[in-house]
Length: 191
Image 1 (cartoon, rainbow, N blue to C red):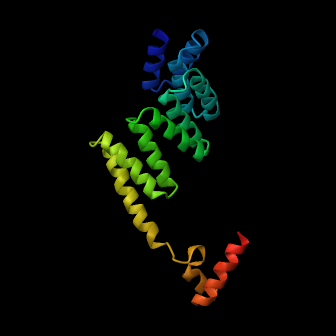
Image 2 (image 1 turned 135 degrees about the vertical axis):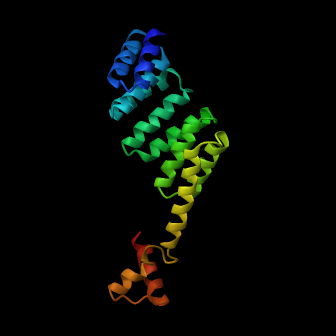
Image 3 (image 1 turned 90 degrees about the vertical axis):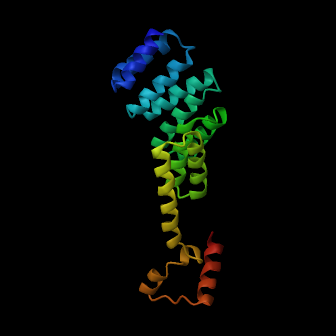
């Protein structure tokens, strides 16, 4: 308990190397302590050592496959490594294990927003708001997502990727319905 408390205090005080040392000692001396592995993974994430964090958090999950905190921290590491799908899956698993995990809902909403999946982003942030209606961050994210969605719809075209008529006009390409239909069929064949 002393090592865990010391590591946690150092982590909260942003003394990350000291926190890492405490958690490394804890995991070495008490390898079955899942919290030690999870906390070491969180410290490694804060230190930017995401690959090591993933390895550490896998150990935590091996010891306790129902540890929502391990999956949550795994999602952070995977997002930092641009493993988007894996991060989504990790945060979903954290939520499945602990449906009231506000930070997992919030992070998932932000990631879906970055991917322009506004429907899923709104759903996740609304779930977060149900858990913490007073969260200014969640309310701000919801407002931002709504604004982003409106802006993205302004740039959508009924013609998909061929619909940028300004670019077609600049290139002196005819945008008649017949020509666009032929271009769309050609693009579909190429896929």
